[in-house]
Image 1 (tube, protein in one colour):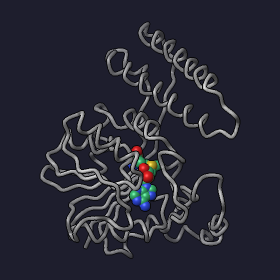
Image 2 (image 1 turned 60 degrees about the horizontal axis):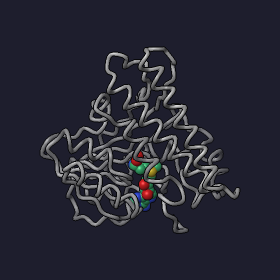
Image 3 (image 1 turned 90 degrees about the horizontal axis):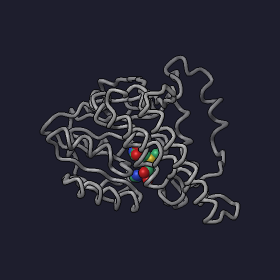
Image 4 (image 1 turned 180 degrees about the vertical axis):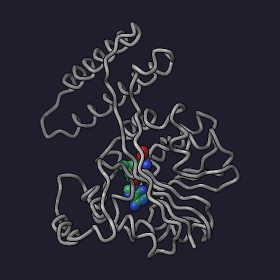
Length: 291
Ligand SMILES: C[S@@+](CC[C@H](N)C(=O)[O-])C[C@H]1O[C@@H](n2cnc3c(N)ncnc32)[C@H](O)[C@@H]1O
């Protein structure tokens, strides 16, 4: 990835990832995710680019698996280790690069990722995952997609179109995320790398909608609180990275307002007033089994 950067310091803090993921991967929608990953008891499972490790915690709570998580970012891994241990979950987290994974050949039954494939050239992303998967093992790459993307013969002119993205410098470290607009690489790439049973799934998930939980007050309040923490984490990150000379007082005021907003939201929820606020995500999961 060229220039060195720290994901948690330069792009997305661990707090942002963790709050947003606790909202997105939870007890009420876990089956949505389990269906995409295809994990079963007894498997050895690795998440690459695992961030704060919340997805792995959800798997480990529900399946009898040997669980591993790697991320290049030491801050994320430190957090992931502490959080799993506080929750009494035995998960092997370590700092490692997807391009040089510290595992034996043919070791894992499942290797999966969530919003990582778009940050590396596909060859760099998949080569070492292929090596450490057992024959018959499954790779699952999940990305968040705004719309369905064309592949195969429908990628007419894509080369030319996406050539314009090559070398584009965006105002973030190391062109994060620029590898996503190449449908052919992601959708058809796997068959060049020793995989078959290649499958593309596309699912929508509603992951925040407190109005739906007037009958489950605890869950509705959980959603509101996660949204609050996530908004605060975002604000802290943005303000601390702003080129403006942001004062501690500005941040306090901003966080104060966010808290007020969500206190009001709680009141409305508890009085069963419809607000109709919601958040959704679309997930594209591309999977295949190693030949
Ligand atoms: C958008 S975040 C997603 C994190 C996590 N999957 C989640 O959804 O919370 C992308 C993650 O990929 C990690 N990453 C990027 N390049 C990597 C590499 N070459 N090796 C390992 N991890 C990498 C980043 O450090 C970051 O944690």
